[in-house]
Amino acid sequence: MTAAIMKLTNICKSFGPIDVLNDISLEIRAGEVLCLLGDNGAGKSTLIKTLSGVYTPNSGTMEMDGVPVAFRNPREASERGIATVHQFGGTFPLMSIGRSFFVGVEPTKGWGPFKIFDRKKANEIAVKAVRDFGITRIDDGDRLVGGLSGGERQSLAIARAVHFGARVLILDEPTAALGVKQATHVLRIVNEAKRRGLAVVFITHQVTHAMAVGDHFAVLIRGAIAADFKRGEKTREEITDLMAGGETMADLEAAIDGSRNEAESATPQAAA
Ligand SMILES: Nc1ncnc2c1ncn2[C@@H]1O[C@H](COP(=O)(O)OP(=O)(O)O)[C@@H](O)[C@H]1O
Ligand SMILES: [Mg+2]
Image (cartoon, rainbow, N blue to C red; front, side, top):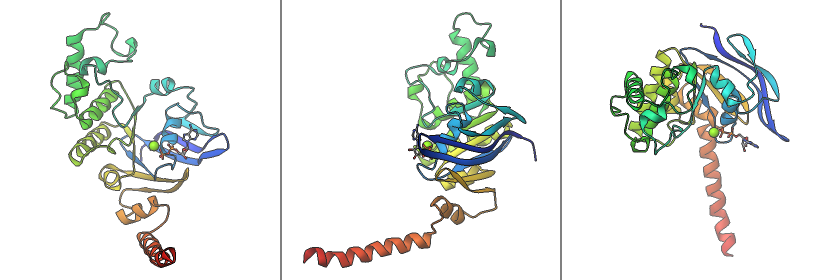
């Protein structure tokens, strides 16, 4: 197994009196997709915001390439190659593809030779980067980002992060708002990023999407890691049950039946 790019040990994060992350230990490896699963409110976004310098943990350690790191802000994390792509791609609808590709890029990171924005060059680089990622439908850098589909926007954002040297790619629910075809598109890009040796942290609560690309899975329940396993070690049913907080499908059915009985017996009383 390759050495971890990032290693979290006993990370805790609270907001005032509320403990949101409890003793999280995880390893993130190059060429691997780590799926972070969990119900709404489990702490997934808080965990990746801690990884990417948005939040500082209250305790615990983070290492990168075996060396302790403490990011004071997202910029420091980004300079170390940690890139986050949010649900809607985080791009600018009214900007051209070429221009949006270079927004916020430091001159020292490859944009140096161009003193003024070179539209043609920017378009060429952006279109080539996305095409190299297998997105052949984006062929004109002058097109507005707002005209792209949700999946294409996600793909553009991922291609951009990879182009500018991301080593750890964090995707927070990239497929949540997408239809089946668009989601498949994004999953293909995730696989391509992994093939190129990136470490991908893929957050989702869709088990099908996780199982399609995941090498390694961590299930968060109320801010703690309830399970940590590798591809093939658990069935879809087991993963689904884990995500439901340990409740099995049978428990759920019993609970639904129970409330139906209550409703039935409650009705005559209510009428009386
Ligand atoms: N900035 C914050 N201040 C206080 N509580 C927060 C903050 N961010 C998240 N929380 C709480 O932490 C819990 C986990 O949230 P979050 O990480 O967004 O979960 P997830 O992404 O898994 O849905 C929730 O109960 C949420 O209300
Ligand atoms: Mg979230």
